[in-house]
Structure formats: structure tokens, C-alpha cells
Image 1 (spheres, rainbow, N blue to C red):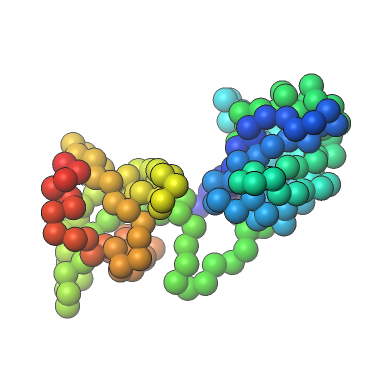
Image 2 (image 1 turned 90 degrees about the vertical axis):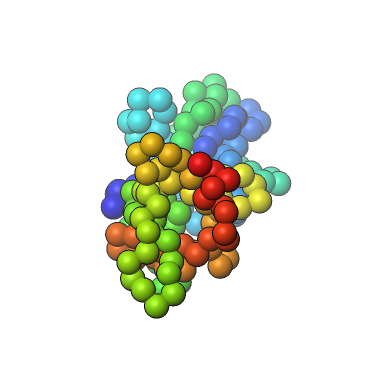
Amino acid sequence: MDEYVLLGKVTKPHGIRGEIKVYPYSGDPAGLGVYEQIWLAGDTGEKTYHRIVRSRVQGRFALLTLSDCTSRDQAESLAGQELWVRRSEMPEVDEDEFYLQDLEGLRVVEYVEGRRDGRVIGRITGILETGAHDILVVRDGTREYLIPVQSGFIVSIGDDEVEVDLPPGLLDINS
């Protein structure tokens, strides 16, 4: 697993004292305030360390004050960068919970009651955030399937595969 977990994106500066406005990918802006240490990465992917000294919520966004960002110009230079935290600082998830990004690369297998050898649909190559619910992007080499992350569709998640129980015809719509 990756050492860092992607949590959001800096959208723009807020005010004149270096505060940054961050869109949280989880949809929970208050959740970003629990971290003291973050890493920001721009187009090159190189991560730079920053310490959060204050956080607050404004609608769907988190407003963060960083120890080393004290002017609007500095905050503007961070716009567009992605916000990461160390995986070791993430809260532990319950047995029936998971972090979406941990699903990338796993095999997707169709659930067949009473059997463990359902048809392999493909591998998870990405996750789309649509607002209503997230969508797993699954590829089998030539085709791409879009599978909603919705209660009842995901039967189980193992170390190397996700077992899904999909409504009849869902895969046909996507192919």
C-alpha cells in the first residue's frame, strides 16, 4: 500500500493572511481538521511538508491555516495542489469499512451464491466521484465498466479481490 493517502485539493487562497481553501474528496471538510501534518503535491508529484495550525469549515470546503503560509501570494502558489496525509495517521477502519483508494488494482469478481469462482469482470483502475455516490472504474483489457459503490452491490472485499452482486444487465449497459 502507498505510504500517503490523497484527501483533497487546494482550490484557491482565502483572505489575505495565507489561508487556503481545500475541497475534501471525502465530502467531509471537518475531517481534514484532525490532521496536524499534511503534504501538498503539484504537477510534478513531489510532496512538500506543511503543518496545519488552524482549520475551519466553510460550506463544502475546509479552510486551513498552514504554519509556513502567511500571505495571499504564498497561498496562491498552492492552488491546484493535492493534499496528502501519511497512511499511518489515518483512522483505522472497521472490518466492514474500507478506503476507496485501497480498492484500486483489485480484481472484481461476480458473486455467485454458494460458489467462490464467479466470473472475473476486470481490475479496478480508478474511482469517479459523482456526488450521488462513487463509481468504480473496472477494466478487463478491452472494455471498461462503471460500477456504483452502493449498498448491496459490494458483497465482500478480500486482500486481492472485490466480490460484487450486480443487477442483471448493468454490465451490458456499460460495455
